[in-house]
Image (cartoon, one colour):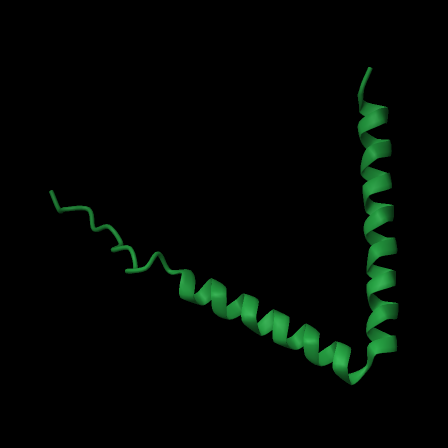
Amino acid sequence: MTKKQTMMPLPGGGKTGRRLAVLLIVVTLVALVIRDPIGTATAVRQLAAWGGAAVDGFATFVEAMSP
């Protein structure tokens, strides 16, 4: 029988990639706000409206499923 190989964990827990991704997202958002603040505000308002509609739809679904 052959031994089962396991993956070795990265030293430091592999948090570097996550931190880099978060930093990249934050820098991109700041750049968008600086470049076009009115357009960014409109996009955020639209995303909030879509999120609210999704939450309302989920709440309606849960209410319909409960006896």
